Length: 71
Image 1 (cartoon, rainbow, N blue to C red):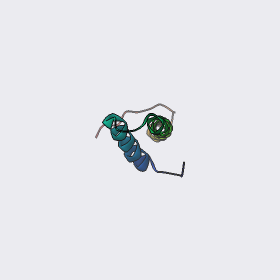
Image 2 (image 1 turned 90 degrees about the vertical axis):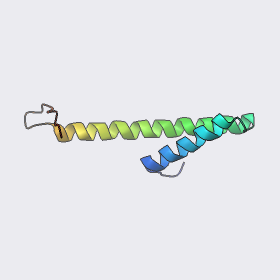
Image 3 (image 1 turned 60 degrees about the vertical axis):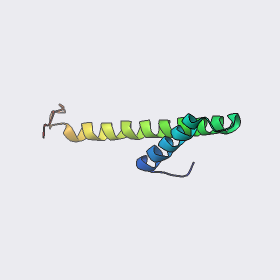
Image 4 (image 1 turned 180 degrees about the vertical axis):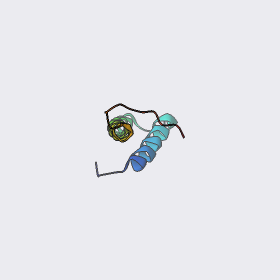
């Protein structure tokens, strides 16, 4: 799979879901799309986890405690 951004991956995943929900794909094509969707889902989950870790680090105070910041 070529390198994609989180946003590109989400858009592609949404497209795959629509294709699968249409019910118009032959079984082999549907399985291929399903596998691609699983890979994209894993990629997106990993990106979200990485982002959450970065945000948590940025929110730590000098003592290492996480402070909840409200807007």
